[in-house]
Amino acid sequence: MNTRKRVTVSPLFSRLGAASALTAAAIGTTLLTPWATPEAKAASPGSKALRVAASKEGAPYKWGATGPHRFDCSGLTLYSFKQAGKRLPRTAAAQYNRARQVSPSARTRGDLVFFRSSRSIYHVGIYAGRGRIWHAPKTGAVVRLERIWSNNISYGRVH
Image (cartoon, rainbow, N blue to C red; front, side, top):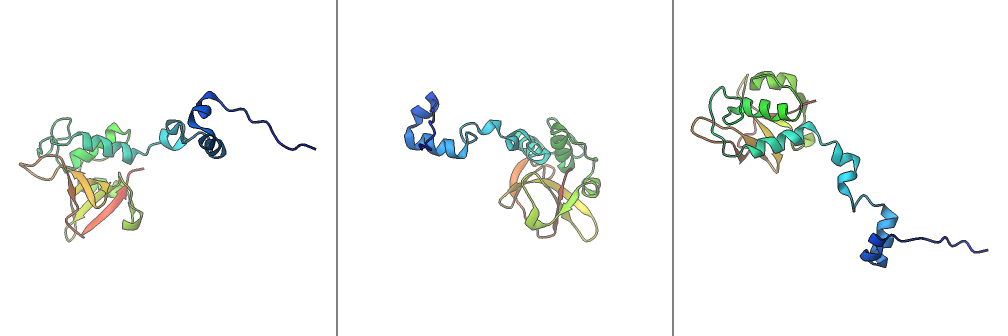
């Protein structure tokens, strides 16, 4: 009895070559069309907000500003998450209270990074990975990517 199955190869696979076609067939076609994966369609609000914040690079800091051309720290996070479909309160402290706290080991790109003094939250940015944040730092500065400069921080995730 012959147990071999006949496999037809699409023109795309024939262009890839026999070994590539067999490999692609064995693992499925998601590698060939990554935009069609459920993960790609369901980008998190944090990753969307991160892209928005990065797009504002060079925008001047202005105390109390919430965009779209000038920002203070919490104004940048508020604006970025609003563009990602999420509402945040206006101040860094209120955003801290709204976000779900996450441990440093569980942080992901797009999480909020809160800077603390002894009892209060004084600054916020969006975690960009590799110990860096997008933020609007202070008067005279612009929105920029910068290394986290303090150990007195907390991470929060917008849900």
